[in-house]
Length: 321
Ligand code: FAD
Figure 1 (cartoon, helix red, strand yellow):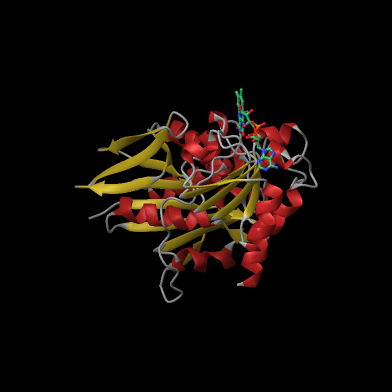
Figure 2 (tube, protein in one colour):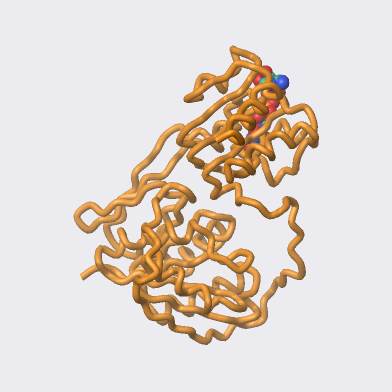
């Protein structure tokens, strides 16, 4: 029979974030052949609904309302509650992003349900949904099975593979009206700390710098490599504290958690708090002049050397290909 599952599509800068397509794939596992319904909120989102269908949503509900132009806990909780009242879903999946982390617990509280957050894997075992999620800053994984009631979960970006995009998939798009009461907080302006580029938490390649980069200027060579590889630049807290880069780039226990295919750590010692944010990267390359640096204990490939000599060689080689 299957379940009816809602998947919230997260819209940023007029586009749906890739983690939402990954959430559709997770939704399919939970639905067990039931219906996966994409949900989009914003000022102008009807034109984006087709993409959710192309990634596997069977139907998409859109709510266009100027009060939903930017994310707010208040506005999105009201809108999501209205959609839940209309659809009575048996599953809800969101990305484990700043938005998902804020909204999912509110929904769990409103619906009096449990919540599995930050899942990196979703499986169906005889109709029960089995999630895998990291604990103790990624040092161990726990498995949680939901055997009854609403399946509410957030999934970590870059872990559950999205279905292949197929523009020929068919699915209904249904714009609906939701009355959003006056918001208690209104976002007046969004000030960006970093310039455009690839989103750090969704990047497939990250070139990260630590205190070994020595200056803000030193980060330029990392930026060049990241751009060539279609990736993003990240940093250790050491580099952020030293004012070489903005804290929005910080990866680790008190920064962002990332899971790229390739993580290149440059001049980063490998403190446990940094590893907490990136140790689940698929391939870790470390460049450090200290052969005893802790980062080499976890690296797949280690290069003992000066990053300012090694990175230009990387760049030269990539440009040659
Ligand atoms: P360092 O430890 O100083 O290492 C610099 C490295 O660069 C050295 O290994 C050196 O050999 C190498 N190096 C120097 N010059 C070169 C060169 N030219 N070429 C190649 N290598 C070179 N840290 C985080 O990163 N993220 C967090 O979220 C975080 N949260 C924290 C939370 C708490 C509560 C605490 C107490 C700490 C936290 N930290 C965090 C800080 C963490 O403990 C480390 O201090 C920090 O990660 C060190 O940054 P680093 O590796 O850049 O600097």
